[in-house]
Image (cartoon, rainbow, N blue to C red; front, side):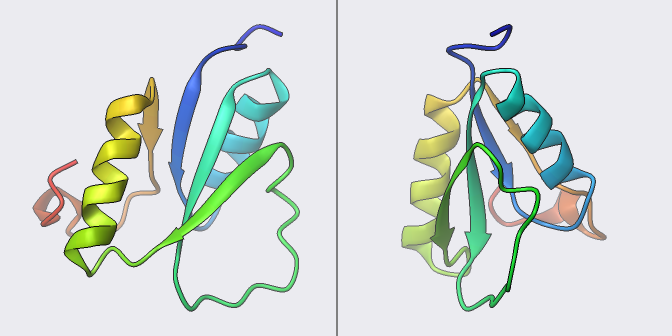
Length: 91
């Protein structure tokens, strides 16, 4: 496995981020998908090989946990959205 030992944090969103995370997991990376709380999804076909955690990023505790996950990872990525450069998390 080419990416064995690489830790990746994926902030869940619409494709292409989940697709990218799935491919990284296929190559051996340990991918942790960070979902929003209170989101109901029926079937996620791009969650193959990933672990997931639901965090409320509007609460300081959720942001603190995400920061700890990012410090422990090699790669963190998220889909771009309007205003991401002004994010209060400053990740």
